[in-house]
Image (tube, helix red, strand yellow):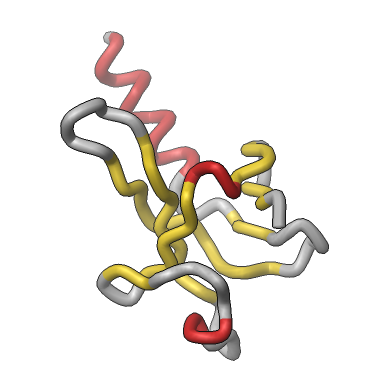
Length: 84
């Protein structure tokens, strides 16, 4: 049962909107980047909104996804809000 809850939570949070501190939509959560040694989430991977140029944003891209360090996440609710 415990593994099922983790899977459900993971599926529930994926595709949530990701907004910056001003409330502007950056995109939607696609995945997480995990440190394989510690198991810690180190970044959220975001599919950027069409019309946004990822090269103009302060974060790197990984396999076409914006890699935002987890330290930049302010809150996770119905949307994921960044601190900057």
